[in-house]
Length: 109
Figure 1 (cartoon, one colour):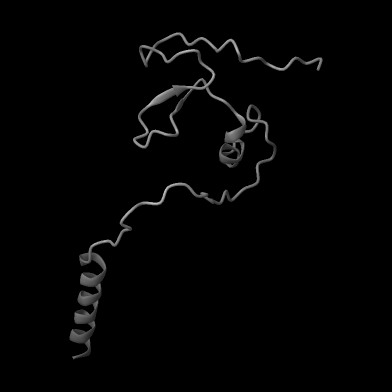
Figure 2: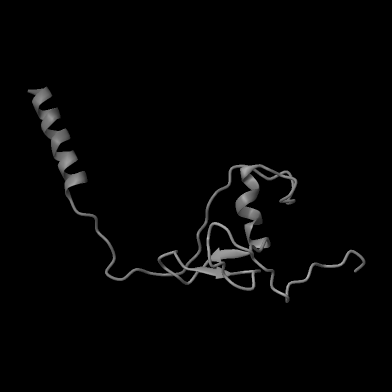
């Protein structure tokens, strides 16, 4: 009797958990702040010296790239230029020219 009751209770829980459709909002809310945990403290913030995974997320906002995914594109397939003058025609092999407005800081100043 107890075994049958336990099996029936387990079956009922499985049906309720997996059988019920997921409840979602009528209209999604955009924006907000994503808070995540990086479980290690990077030894330094030098991206060229460190090779730990703990540096990737904290230092990412401080580095520009030649090309990046458009943050306003919800599909994540549109590529925009960051430091490059134009997008490459052929994605596998192309020459990318750095934008003339980009300047490296001089060591003397």
